[in-house]
Length: 394
Image 1 (cartoon, one colour):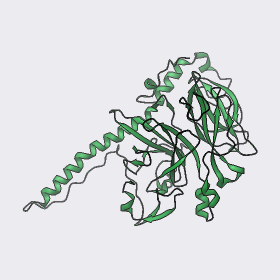
Image 2: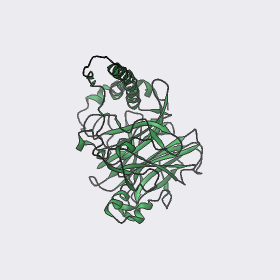
Image 3: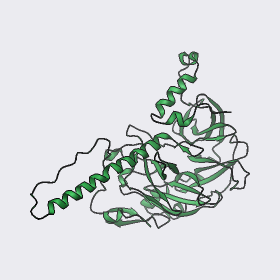
Image 4: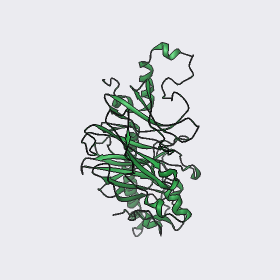
């Protein structure tokens, strides 16, 4: 199967708008004019009942594979259903990861293991998904599923590959709250270090792990952010991308709920570097992919190393804003030096008008606030002064 509609062409610039126009041209006029069915033409809908959390698509067997949470009960427990698509129409293949022993399957990710790192064969499709072991909420743990038929059927390893030790030791309400938020793994292949990197959503931070084989995971660090009013991390992602100026960046993105502090309930992201143990953010204040209304549980689509151009566009925009700010800072230093010169006339410093395109910095709150120490595997809380919050963790 050839992909006649280029993702690079579709997603550059307007992104979704260009995609919609291209799909309109690809659908026969009769289909567009059909008023018999009330189903959306361009959007994937399940054959019946309720769906949630579409997983990051993969390409296997020459076609796109899409998986999503599905339940016969509205907002109820369920498993993963599967559909294939050419980007326009969808063919449904039913449930591939069902409820087992009464335990549902929650969000996760899939990768094509071309290097046979997990031992199931080159090209095997590997999925990591959260399940609450024994249906106990504080035992949210990460399970591995594998497929050798291109992703049309899966087998689950009986034991979790990433155990939630917090759930076994949690006693206080805060500890239980943290243990009950341990989900949504995303995996990226770090080619420079020949290992997998996994990010996991937690109550007020993200846990980062590495593995050579997708089975055995080592905790490396926690990624924390200063303003905990942003809420917990849902469906995080970590990946590398190349910006428009040719520079390479690591990105952490996640669905965040900052509605209570006047910020979006959408997709936040941080650019930075990954040194094999820590993600070091360029700025701990997040950028926002979308300043619109409710957008939850976003999964960034990846294919052959090319990420959604909307993310790349926002990263490019962020870099341009930083470049634009540098001369302003230099000008202010020169201005202050001129004012400090003996005999210089006294005058108030010029006020700078903030451009509408520059997103405001977040208020980190009071004189002290709570932090989770990234050097501790279970994210124990510690009080730190705000000036320490801006310090890059080594």
